[in-house]
Amino acid sequence: MSGNNELALSSEDYDKAFTEVSFLLDMFVETIGVFVGKSTPSLAVAAGRKMAANMPIHMAEATPENALSELIRVFQIQQMEIEGRFDNGQAVLSIHQCPIGSVCKNRDMEIDGQACQMFHYYIAGIMAELTGVPARPKTIETGETCTFNLAFSGVRKPS
Image 1 (spheres, rainbow, N blue to C red):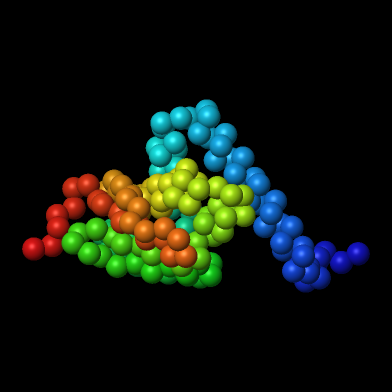
Image 2: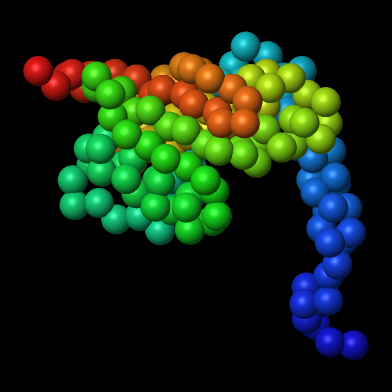
């Protein structure tokens, strides 16, 4: 038997895997909510900070603008349809066909519910670690495209 089973996977295999991952993410989010409660955002930020330390990113200067550019670059390599820009000192991130949104639809979970919020705080944690400045997410739009802002503490707005 060959060790290259991934080459022989069918679309049905991918659908089954997506269903399983969706189930696991749903259970993970529910379990965290039960055990951590109101500290869930802090846990998601901590996970994002840990991830940032493992991302293939090198910045000459740890600014929010550089961090956003690198985050977008790395996520686009992973085939995520993500865009980002700065508006009035805040990062504005838009994700088209968000993978977390796909899981929410698959599991009949609320869009912009706990799973989405955890993902936004996870991204905030990544950005906080890359910049050395705390970041706080705020959802702007949900649906086919999800848009959220990241406000950075201690960063002056451009004049």
